Length: 79
Image (cartoon, rainbow, N blue to C red; front, top):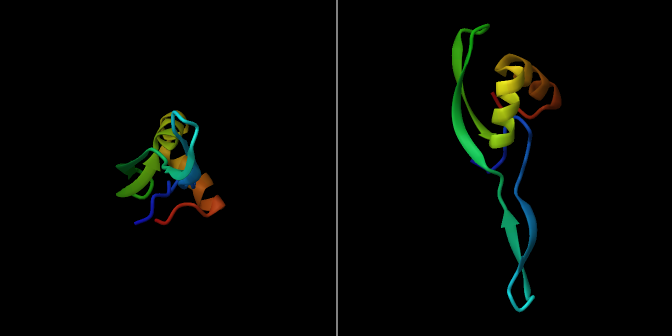
């Protein structure tokens, strides 16, 4: 499975690794992903999502139902 957040859609970004001698070579910045299970009381089921730490904070603030509804509207959730 790819390294993409299923809520926010965050993906790996590319950039430069810069050495002490200021040499630059390409590298990737990966999102901070966690595999988490969430219970949805409206559907009475558990779902497993791969979410970033930013998405976890958003879920804690707004609730899983509201976040899933918004993510489905944006086309990010695969479930």
